[in-house]
Image 1 (spheres, rainbow, N blue to C red):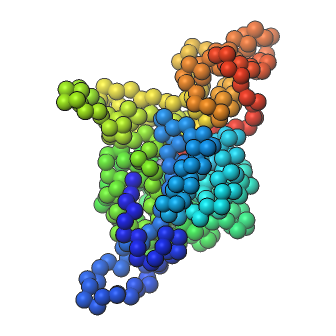
Image 2 (cartoon, rainbow, N blue to C red):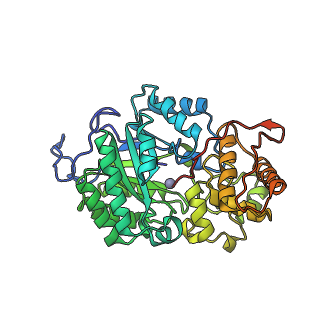
Length: 422
Ligand SMILES: [Zn+2]
């Protein structure tokens, strides 16, 4: 998303300490323009998220080998941080974290986790250098995603931050959907976590609605409220991601999240297909609105909220363009709410407990290889069939183990696999 030029100000990719805005910078050339002392355009750090945000891209299935190859390439390029999918997403995601931590890369390894103790403990145990804690703060997400109020969010944030710090690790606290969150609530929360000693606070334009001017104003305001570093995360649904990142740095942000090719959850619009075909060009995969995955939702917590209310993660109604949204349900990032929706589409009847069990089976297979919709549907249908065979009057009867899908052996089921993230 963001360019990597202009980082030569303090020498070296890993040694740059983001300055406090109140410190004045010595000018090498006495005739040079005074510039803007708050701007970090010529000195910022990259938090490279291809292996986290990028894994939420509709087509992404990264094997362990491919993740390692990408991590090494990013490291040799000189990114300061590499962010990985939460180990709570699936057993393979957890093991991938451990293996990448053991590569001995120069870049610090981070993982992106929900704001709860269970996920934080699991992440700390993988050997990462830091945790990127995230929780939705907009009224949309508070109502339709996790259902928690600001008091609860603050309390759990402080608890998780204290725990991560006690382990000697870096900690970032980010709100999700920051630009649709109440400003007073947001600043109070950031002030509290700054006081608790976080290394960075993060603002995230999770739904891709922010404009450069809004970004500048929010970051500038935040710069005056917290003394820690400020990380920024922008989606490109309206084509503003790079402009927004640039404005954030001008306003004093210190860190920018990136992903190679800009891959990530959704992207940015349709009519174009007809003209593109006529002039013999392809519609770019990541086009706003017409790109093939503009309205595809993959991560578990996104899918859950979208099913409750599409405004949670969409700022444009696909129906306005004659398009339909797609909830991607056949991946290791899948949550049980997306599977529940699929079960209903298939006209099957299962209890929530049974849906959670079958979700675990789909995630387990998706840890081993890409899972096609047909594979996921077969797992659901076989599970339902066995359920019917054994139905003995108990609503929660669990069927015996399914060991094969479309003739392929299923790996051992890990219980407790959960849905994850932004
Ligand atoms: Zn994101």
